[in-house]
Amino acid sequence: MEREWNFLMNKKRLYQYAASFSAMLITTCSGLHFGWTSPYMPVLLRKDSPIPMTNEQSSWVAVIYLIGGPCGATITGLTLDVFGRKSLLIASSLFFLISWLLLAFAHNLPGLLIARFIAGFSDGLIFATNPIYLAEIVEKQIRGCICSFIAIVYLIGILLINVMGNYLSIQQSSLVSATLPILFFMIFVWMPESPNYLLMKGDYDKAKKCLTLLRPVNEVNKELEDIAESIEEDASVKFPHLFTSKIYRKSLLVVIGLRGGQQLSGIVAFNFYAQTLFEETSDVISPLTSVIILYSVQILFSIASSLFVDKLGRRPLLIVSMLIVAIALLVEGAFFYLRDNSHVDVRHLGWLPIGGLFVFMASFSIGMQVIPLFIIGEIFPINIRAYGSAFSDVYYFLFAFIASKFFQVTKDEYGLYVPFFTFSVCSMLGLIVIVKFVPETKNKTLHEIQLELKNMK
Image (cartoon, rainbow, N blue to C red):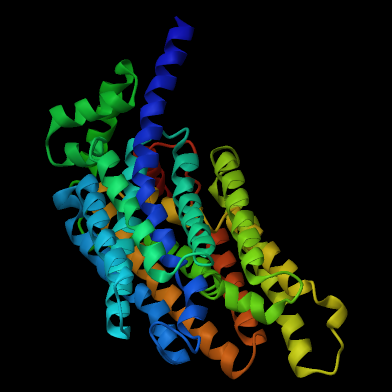
């Protein structure tokens, strides 16, 4: 009997894995777009550039992606509970397909900017929707592990575009990448909708049918009752409660603190300008080799984090991650200050900038890379989960935009030590927010998390 139960559990989990990883396939497309500037920015700035532009114009090619993101996130907040999780993810694949085709055939700066804006818009749809979809379809015992892979497949996309960028033209890589949203649509269209969403809309039969695909038969009714109870308890919770209720204001503070700490550590700036940064800091290995190693480190440590996040918990990983990040950035800033503004000879420490960046990326990946992406889907009740996720995404793009422009301007005007020191201070502030406010959510159902947050009040 026990063997039959274990087999059934494994079979049901396989369906959870299939639905989860097919949903994450489109996130790889997002990573391809996000990392696109790293290999192709140097191409656009060359004398023989296919689209000639200045340094200032090229920076807008990078950051307009971050302007499109909040637009997509805002649309998600307004429509996620109307059209459903599955429908918005499918819609994002259409926008991504359009963006890749525009990018492939862009012949001027406006065309390039439009393509990048649409890509950012699609990114906003995905990252405001996917964490909620995954949190609602997977079991509590594996929710952290599965949801962590959102960041991992995203990093794989960034790594792939950096490799493709060194062998393929802009048009060639764009056409290759355009096959991904098509593949996603062909697979994901067969996957189930979130049972939580269906039950919230009052469609009990469809909710039960979808949950039966994802859970053992004798667990379905119990979980449906748990979801229904959660929906009933929070029926009166509306959008204004994000600001008027102490419980949800605290959850919103957690969102702002995690997203601020994540992006103001400089991660998005380092990703945008990875190859340019390596050209300035090392002559030991090529920029491409450095980037490949860099993202491989991030992927490996993010996978390690996903394996332990449901055992060690969210808080310990976040605290250790942010502490080491702050120290690594401080050391990097000190090196660049001594190199550029003192008479101290640091030539014998030529390995330090690259080594420090690898330590930064590894430590960032064990906590801050993966956990802020999915904890948002855990700490808000279902009635305002879409709004909370949209706010998370808007803050992500806002902080990423600020960090990218700040990095580009300060490194050009004052030197690399200024952004590194600033990002270190921001990381220390993020650490304080984590210690004081971030709740532990491991091995708890979404309903249990809400009950605990209410009791904490």
